[in-house]
Image (cartoon, rainbow, N blue to C red; front, side, top):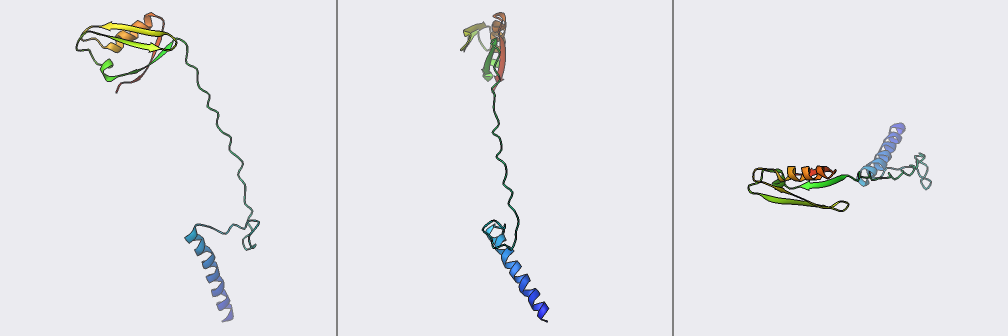
Length: 122
């Protein structure tokens, strides 16, 4: 009978310790300041290296353009489209009705030895 009583007390004590851990979110870890009930060493994680982001240089003959939807659709009337690039200055191209302004400007840039890096369309 005494053994059952001691077993019951130890079960209750364990339930209190781990029940408190569930409620508080803290589990006894046995750190250097613990009472020694759960001697578990704490593994310190090594500092993670910071990733180095190296920008990829863009070739000097590339012009990046963010197209508008209207630039990619056939034009309703004749017009002119221009782009200004920090390395190559301003480039313009004229288009006629029914022609896509983006195509006209791309051809003009290609005639100058430049490549278009397209983005957008919406």
